[in-house]
Structure formats: structure tokens, C-alpha cells
Amino acid sequence: MAVFKELDEDILFVIFRTCDVYTVLTAARINKLIRALALSKAVWVALVADLIARCIMDAFSDPDFRNYSAAQLRGVVERLVCGPAWAEERPARVVRRQVSVDTSDIFSKISPRWSTYVKLLPGGRFLTLENYDGRLECWSLTRGLCVWTYSQKRRTNYTVEMFDDGNTARFLLPGSLKASFSIVQVDLTTGHSYELFRMPQKDEIRWWTDGDAVLSGNFVVLTLHVHGNRTLLLINWKEGRYLSFHQTLTAPGMAVVPGHIVLATATLEPPHRPVLLAYTHASLASYWRPLADWAPTAPSDAFDLHRIQQCSGIRPAFVMHPGAHEGWQVASEGTRPVSQGMRLALRPSPLQRGSYALSFVVYEKDGLQLVQSSAVPTVPVCKAGDVSYARYSIVKPGSIEDVDLDRQEAGKTELEVIRGESIHLSPSSGAVTTLTGPLVSVSYFV
Image (cartoon, rainbow, N blue to C red; front, side, top):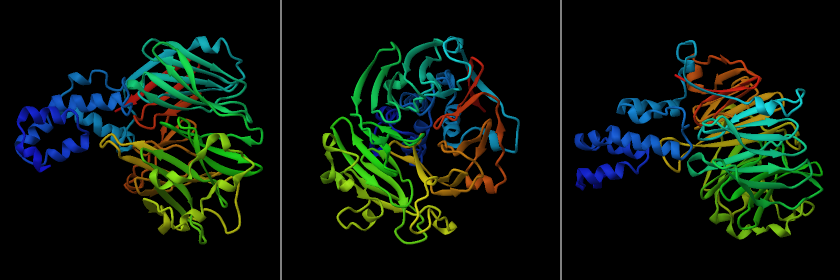
């Protein structure tokens, strides 16, 4: 940071407009001149625009942000990090902005006996309506029109990744229970789509259970069910290579970030507490196999997620034992309960590029047991499988709960009751999307 002292004001201004929030705030501590530049409106307009371009902030959250003051712009970022003021002294929720779209067209095409699920896509420009009979539609909030449709015999349980300032979506789409999966890229401005990749069909497996699939750049993570056993399959679909991991005690979890994979498993020794292991891609380079050679009935090339902890040839970049002091136990020795497993969610930080908030969930069919979010364990009584960056979650139909331990201890755990046939909480922006009849509403709270 000392190098900033030697730069002219004009050069500093250009540099700050290309930095992330963390770098700008750190530089602001150097001296008064640099602080004035770092906290200027022009710099913060650029920072907020960058968050929108990377789909961390929704485009419709603050559409007039260029007219905001510097202090208001910093408040926008603070709201992304901390979430809405739902839990502050139990106020009535206040909607500061709401966008709605009438989706009557889709309801005229489907049977009323099928449920419909709504989801706001990252970036906030588009949403999906997913019907239980297998119809998936993507709608533009700007135009109020369906821009893309996909149909199959059952609910798709898709995973999506956004590109090009939120105007291009890449969908990971399953087939039937025993069919293959495909990756489809969609230009959401034109509705044009094409298939990037399709996995050959394997009759012996069920591809994944709800919420287990991951799509991250060139990588796909699938939970496979082969003859009653669960295996994680990590696929580099662009290069046609794979790694497989199997677990002997409980359903594992995996997340992928640039340069690393993160595994959730259990310790080798009883009582088999949760453990997070991160490995660099380079440390696993020699273990990749051609995807064409993979067969579900030949698991001999799979890593055992327990024994990998003792493999001296593969050293993790870091090891974390979430909730160890709480005495959480993943499974009893010698058992592998089907209902029990782990789930990981990594959310990109609004503050620093290349930094992520990690949510780690140990769950059973009866509810959520443990959440590790930014190294803060929490124990909410809920059935959530997804936690937002600001550590909120939909815990039951119509209710949003604060699952941050520090805020819970301060007595700020208010539930927000929101009515709707389907409700979605955006993992990054905190927007709440509700479906009531044919009307979809996206709400941003104070």
C-alpha cells in the first residue's frame, strides 16, 4: 500500500476504479488525500457497477445508484454484506423496491395440479418458473416475457451459472432418473440456446438428489447413487476428465472455487466429526482420468474420502474442523445413515475478489443440525438447505430466519413471514421472490 503514496491523484483515481471494495477501503487508511479519493462518489459508482456486472448485486436492487451520494453507495455495499434490517429491534419489514411480472401465460399451459417453483437468477434480471411436470421457463423482468423454455418428463432440479453481466446463463440440466445430464448455454437477450456438453447415459445410476449438483466454470460436481452407495464425481467437462470420491460413513459435500476444491467429510476417528479439506487443483493433477473411461461399476479409481486424509502424497491446502468444540457427530462408527449428509455453499464476497463465505451444513431428514458460515457455527431449528451470504435462510414455507450466531446471541432472530405459493431467497443479494397465482414479485428490503 505504500506505493500509493508515490502516485499522482489522477493515476490513483484510475486505479481505484478497477479495485475491489476491500482494496479501496484499505488504501483509504494511508493518508487524508488518498482517503478523500478512495471515498469519492466516482470510485464507489465504479465499485457498485462492478458488483452488478459480476452478478453479486442485482441490477434492479438500486437501478438509480449513479444518482446516489458516496455515503449511500457505501450503504448499498453494506446491505449486501450484512443483509436487510429484518432483525434489528423487530421492526415491521419495509420493502424499498419491488418488481413484478405477470406470468399468466405459463399457467395457461400447465395442469393446475402441478406445483410451480420460482427462482431469481443471479444478477436479478431474469427469473425461472419450474413446474413439477418438467417445464422450465426463464422470464425477463425488464420485458415481462418468457425468453427461453425447456421441457422434459419431470421436474428439472437445475443448477445455473451466469455470465456476461447477467445476460447469459449456463444451465446444468438432468434427464430422467437414469438418463444423462447436459449443460446448455442460453443467450437470455435473444433466447438462443445450444448444448455445450452431454454425459453419456449410465443405466446403473441415479444422477443426483435435489440440491447436490454443482456447476462452476469448467467443473461439474454430481452425487451419484450406484447400487445403494454414494459417490462424488468431479468432472472437467471442457477437457473431458474426471475424479471420483466415495464416502463410507455419510453423504459427502463438495464445492469448487478457482484453483481449489473443498470437500466436506468426517474424521477417521470416532466420533467422526465434520471436517473440511481444501485441495489445490495442482495437487490432484496426476489423478485425473479420461471421462470416456469412467464406468459406475468400476469404483477402484475412486478416492476414499476418509483415507485421503492419511495420504501423504496429497496434502490439503487447509483443514477446518467446524463445530468441533460443540461435539457434533456425523455418524456412529460403522454406520452410514442414508438420511444424513453434508452440504457446502460458497458465496463470492462483495468486498474482495477471490474471497468467499463458506456455509457448511450437516443435515438429517428431520432438519438442519449445524451451519458453519464464515467460521461462525450456528444451530437454528429449521429445515433449510441454503444459507445466503449475509446468513439468512428460508427455514419453512413463508419464513426467513437469521442464522448468524452473533446476532442470535444479541436476541435478533426474528422470523419474517411472507406469503406466497413459492418463495425464493437470493443467496447473494437477499432479494425475496414470491409466486402468488400468476404474479411473481421480487422484493428488496430496507
